[in-house]
Image (cartoon, rainbow, N blue to C red):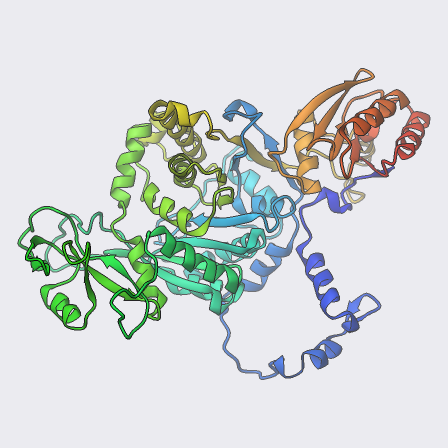
Length: 619
């Protein structure tokens, strides 16, 4: 029976470097000599595709090499379950994870590798005032525990990335680069990540996405932040920003083409050419900003359709632009000429001009704040994203049963959007939210309302959004998953053996009693699931076998016994349970010091082998 110690692959998250080397070995076995890569042989194999010039186009910054290494470094942490903060713990397929998203993304690499269809994130925009994660590449997990006050009595504060810093942009890039590298691994081949951003870092974000996803797989869309085409008035002689950006990075070219198809389908428009326009198939886009009488502004005028009906409205284009489009046969009147005018968009035109219209006339951050206030009261959260913007992205980027991740989840808008979409379209999408438990500001309304951290706000928002759906749609809600399992990032439940440690006596004791004090069976169970690469929402049942508790994960795929005084009778009971469940593969895990004695440990191993259970491990 092999023990899972700190050197075992099962004691860590996925080793991305080893996995990349294995893939390279499958592609080019000839370049490996005595287990190492022969660089000259690889160069010869790739031939003219190797760039040997000293000067070449390159996007770099201070700290990039460390950021790349950090993305490849496994995590030794774990996710501890918090059922008391969860909703529908036993049945839900949704996750809410508190923790540094860099470490959490590492821990999800095994369980959710290539299983996620869509990721949406709204990261810090790097305005000089907002928070940027302070990664410590030596030991990021310890750094996180200090920052969240779990190990530091003085409580170190999370800090902002000041625009006075000499490495202002580099700090932001060092934060984003490893997180995007890890996020790409989670995406399916037809998956996509959408990233909200503004002018501060749009160019840098596009550059790192080009590097990680490939230049052909990155597009930038415009999000018109004005609600219904309007914004509050600003002072004279000032410039007002009326848009932000959504960067879309596709896992593959296949994902990119699929996304375009889904986005057009969402608009309920099919490409067609009913008027035999020589420019080819087209679809129509709305140019009207409402159905009431025009405001009298520069884009308020009367348009008369072919049947003589007049429309006195505000439009998204000027009268001069309209007349130019009409003359160029780019205006389409709906309902066979009886309806409102719409703009023709041709299939062979640049994608950006088509896709931009998809993100117009959605709610603004101001409306999002108002909606959040209706759910939670006045808590003053800066610039939350409107739920219907994220709903639009979900419709574009995912299908009915897909997994959606947001690892900068903030107030939980993405989870809210997933539940809304499932309710509206009778789908079964699942969400995974990740949020740092960043403390709310002292004397803030959020803190006065009882929300100590941003994560507390997110969890309560999701609870109340689910309850709202239950109240408004009681019958439909019975078929919906409106719950979520809460997990919290922490150090491993297993004490690591360290021969360099000063206290040898304590080290020897730790080798015998290697489970950390205060850790529960449930903590251990979910760490085992995580390190084995099993879904954290798999069904788990408990069985009593010869007075020992056995956890059955995934209908017998994994059987875990963490009890003490284990004898061969327990092995016989586990064998019976395995035969009854009849899983395709069965793995068994025990607590290493849980056996009654060494003889029983040997007998247990032999008994399980007799029943064709070959993979037996201990922790």
